[in-house]
Length: 405
Image (cartoon, rainbow, N blue to C red; front, side, top):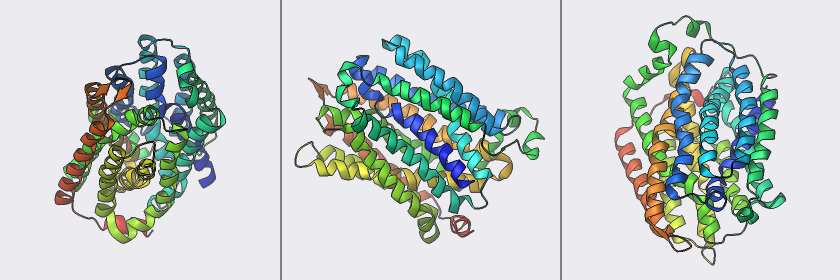
């Protein structure tokens, strides 16, 4: 079972990481997009995440098997990836990207729901399975940078091939999804027929709990600086002439692999509050290192900043998924995962991508950007969010109990 779920997560994140990491560079060199247009492109992820709770709460929790819905979405996604590869200007590229991300983002909640439903102790078992998603992202980046060297010839249009590669992986994942363990709607979820229940609003009841409401708000706020990383890092490394930029970025996923394995132990020993706090503080430190590093003798600062992706992502986002699942109860697992997807990849990153596009345009200079100033903004913001979180969030013994199951 764990092997089957691991393959699913490997293919899910290979399909995403195989084009998303280099999107900013592709937009700049091939579609000649401005910072504002780049923000629009990246914001499609946020719009998809905002819609995700309705798709998952309405369909996956009540009417259709989650694994079948996952397969259908990825088959359609493969077709849309091919359309993105054919687009020659931003006006034709953007609509296809928007449709794709509206369909893709709910799959992040679906793969979590399929995984959690097959596990007796998610806090113990999920990190061991989820780490294969990280490996999928790493493999995609290494193939782009070292096997095909598409990022080295980005100006000649080679990055279009990333969409073709991901179309193929999307078709494969779509077919594979129909072989996954049956994940039918739960009877308790099928029995709720109110309008709010049908739209997945029942998961909003979780916000009545003070601690979860603080966590939900912190998730939105910390994703504002996160958007700077997704939108700007690959372009930043390319502009300052770091070799094999996409491949080097996989250092972050390698770190994520290591910290994913540490996560259950850390939750058990230190609890949810400290785990989440370290994740937020890591973002502030990472951006500070980006502002200080360069492609010369200070390149090691950039490498350390990339390696911080482990605690940045695992200690906040993966532990947050576990926390959400533990508070949701079995009858609203998928809707709750959709809700936290809305907070992290939706509302927060929608604001963040807009802010990143505005700031990147404001600090554009001849031949590139003033990256020192650009990275200062998310560093300070992440630090403020972390301070507010530590002052308001109460540690929970629930994290210990779940981790010990």
